[in-house]
Image (tube, rainbow, N blue to C red; front, side):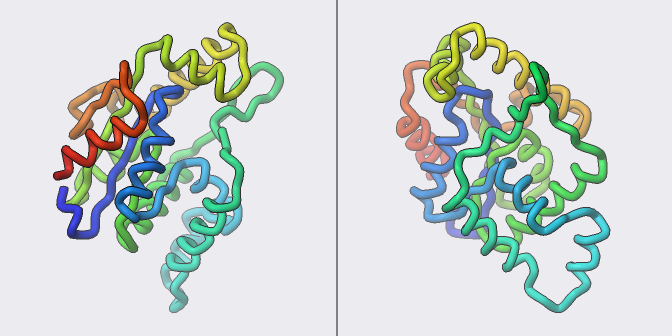
Length: 214
């Protein structure tokens, strides 16, 4: 990846690994925008995006992607951290994604990357940008105990609750990736760089990525 040209870095991560924090820190270090799936979901709601709406906007003469990005930057600065994938009904987790919505998300992400260099955290980033000419794909992993402790502290959960959250999200993300990409998010062949957070701080992980980029 050439950081002197327009680039996109995608970060896939295990829940509780600190991958989202690493992505944000890396974006600040490189002076580029950071987008995650939570933010994209909120923007899709704000702009009422679907396949038809995207086609209509693409055919207009307005700089709608720039408006979209400006809105993303504003929301990113003002929204609270959103655990969108943990919206619960009773005791169950839900993430309803249709084929159409996956295509909408894919087009949104691709157009964001066309506008500017950026870092995108999300489950399917390695797939969406597989053929991008200047793309670095990173996977952040961590030992289970590291993940449990982080989730316990971050969300004020008991060990049992944290383990349950991790199991639910792991299963949901893997099912999502397999459904829409035909591969596993654990297949390291999908990534340029795989980092284990065992014995590492987020800053050390950021430094490793920067060293890899060169």
